[in-house]
Amino acid sequence: MDRTDRIGKRARVAGWLRRAQRGDAEAGRDRRADLLHEVVRLGWPVCPAAHPLEYGCSCDRVGCPSPGMHPMSSAWQTQATLDPAQVDRWLDRHPEANFVTATGVAHDVLDVPAAAGELALEALGAEVGPVAACGPDRHLFFTATRGTPVDEDEWWPCELDCHPETLDEHPGLRWHCRGSYVLLPPSGHPSGATVRWIRGPETALPDPLRVLDVLTDACDTVGAGATDTRWLMGR
Image 1 (cartoon, rainbow, N blue to C red):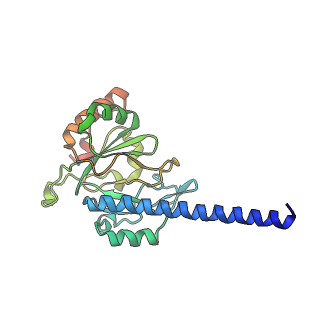
Image 2: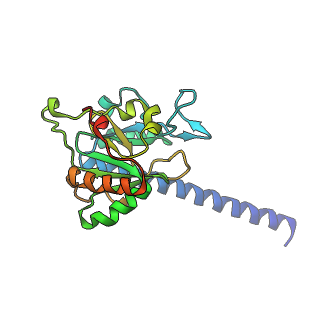
Image 3: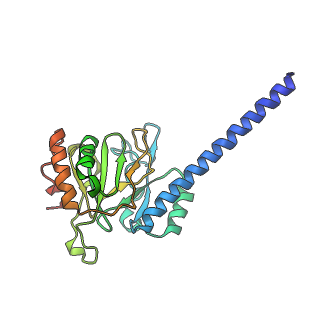
């Protein structure tokens, strides 16, 4: 093979790799859009979030305590939407953004250490609803909401994610209800992992008190100290 042939072969290989990478990127974008549209169809409001960037966060906060794990805007509660067209506009405008779902409207989320989550998955069996792995160290158990969105006075507020620097102070069970949010698959986690579904969102949402009972026992078993969740519920 002469030099011209070798150059031509390398160019063809490089072109094939570029096309394959473009195809993978497009497939990833389509998969992300499909997952977001699925939860919107279920009535879960969503909005765009920051994403991990190198060793920090895409937001402009110096030393962000929760890189890639908070909404882009402080007005996220009013931005959260069920409009698939708006979701598509966000995806086009912010191709690298993570997405969160606002809790306390269509669902609550019980957020526990992964070790406790694994125990609870086994204990709950068929009773478990949607569950996501949020990085290597947390599991998110989606449940029916204890709030009543038609009567705002009955909602249980949660300040957890309005002040993300408090996350490390509460390493056990966290109850995300009104005023909170969680990352949705396939968001990027600061650990480098991808938030993923263990049981998909199409699974029926269980009663939170039953799940809470099992998760509390699981957290106590692994020593995560989930004995008092009153602070999460504004009580």
